Structure formats: structure tokens, C-alpha cells
Length: 88
Image 1 (cartoon, rainbow, N blue to C red):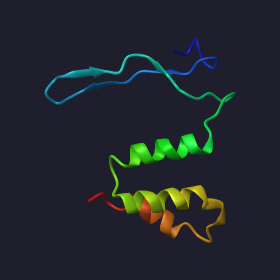
Image 2 (image 1 turned 90 degrees about the vertical axis):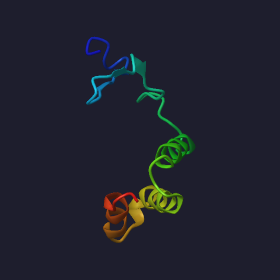
Image 3 (image 1 turned 30 degrees about the vertical axis):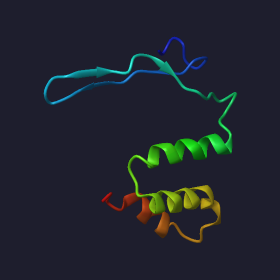
């Protein structure tokens, strides 16, 4: 991977479970590069897709709004609480 960087950004993930099963993602390349970054809509869609698997919808929506407008926030208390609250 290092020899191809920064022209290409490849990743590979291997996970071994406690039971000894090995899961390998294989090589994959990012959809986006520094020279062709994602659009705002693509970023929001990715966030919604990934957060929807882990967070309640209302919390994910509020987190998205806080992150998207973080430069307008007077303080980071609410943003930090959204990030650090346990997932129920």
C-alpha cells in the first residue's frame, strides 16, 4: 500500500474473532480522493447510512445538524454529549 500512496489510497481490514474466525475485507480503494472530494450530499448520505445502523434516528439527525453547522455553535457541549452518550 505504501508504494502506491499517495496516488492511490488502498485499505484492507482483517478481523479475527475470539472463536478464531478470520474475516478479510480484501483490498479496496476509497471512493473519494483529495483531487475529487465528496459532495455535501454524498457526505450526508454516508453519515445517515452509517449512523442509522448504530444510533436512534432523532439522535443521528441532531448530531448531523450539529456537525454540519459546528462553526456556528456557541459552545460544544451539546455536540459532545451527542457523541459521548451511550447507545441504548
